[in-house]
Image 1 (cartoon, helix red, strand yellow):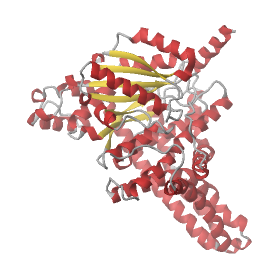
Image 2 (cartoon, rainbow, N blue to C red):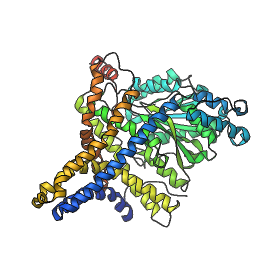
Image 3 (cartoon, rainbow, N blue to C red):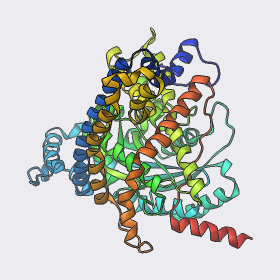
Image 4 (cartoon, one colour):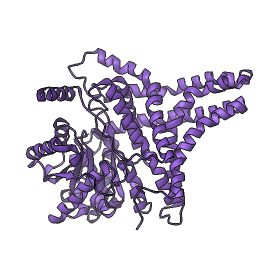
Length: 549
């Protein structure tokens, strides 16, 4: 069996080398510009133009996929997924009933015909369960209550929902009290509602979400065995404490699970939208949250680049076979893709679920703490660069279990994502001035003199993507809370002048930070919980602290 574990302590020389590769390339891209500027301003100009053209092409591609993705999201949200799923129970009755031009209706008509022709190959919807593991550390009751209530309010049959609240012993007595309160409130709402306390300081675990949900997953396995429920009939979804699934999410996931004959080798990825509290958070956080939301929309329409992120669903039998999630990384969501890919010898894919799971944007009780918390979140995501050595050593050895060229393409895409995040905005923003600043002879080069102007022109053309994002953002925003006046809407427009600042100060710096930690072997072994709240919950927290005094 393939060893799926990340080394906790000493790494092999090959592993250490590939840990350093992302930082070497990201720093090297900037250093190369400096060297070329000293040696030949012309070559520096050519290098920067190649970088700028690459960024320009990516910007156009992203804009296209942004429009397609937003349209598909709208179409999927309009689908009655509970009705679609119910019709798979006896598809012969409904063949030919649907005539909408909505792509999902057209596909549903085809699916009904396929299942009706060979119904024995497909499980019945009534035989399935959706299990939900909600991970929490020390989040307040209001946040968790809203998440569990949103699960109960979905259109999926609650008697086919198994909910496990996975909380940390590290959270202390207050977390224990919240779990007990929620167990009393929701104990009879679902087929089952369980609370699972993850012990602290278990051997072989870093402090993170992976250990918590894996511990809960093993408890879920025992729960199913005791009730003689076949793991093949259970789909497991992990949710963070602030997640609010779309009403049709579990119906949609069960629907897709039934359709795929290779269902064990697939996971199901919804679109994470950071919009729950978008009206409350400061402008820089709104820009970051909206940008991340659109990146998730774009990823959904590019299946070859789609990876597990945040909340996702996977069959229980697959999870049992691979011992659930990694307990050795703080980015267990993205890493789950690679665990699954290598465990199933390359026979693994991610199915996009075109409905959202709504999440909170970063917000703390002060402006400064919010700015810091946003960086903490992004540096954790950027630590996904730690997957580069994990993939590389399994690809470039005799123990390889996946197709070489398919694995190599995935590795290149993984590297490209992290390198782009780190250095591209730096090169495009400041690169045009580097030859002129550090080489006195550069002023004699026409190419070097024209470079800032050319780069500026490319940036302005590429801004079309930003305009599209602003327009689509207003179509996605939840209604403006009554506590805010109309000028808040105007602020939602002018906030986008901060885009270059957030790209540099957050995305680039967080990427360089995480890659530098890997370069130096200073590993991140603790999951720093991101503070998320709303204006209302912040006031409630302040009131609770005041009452205690």
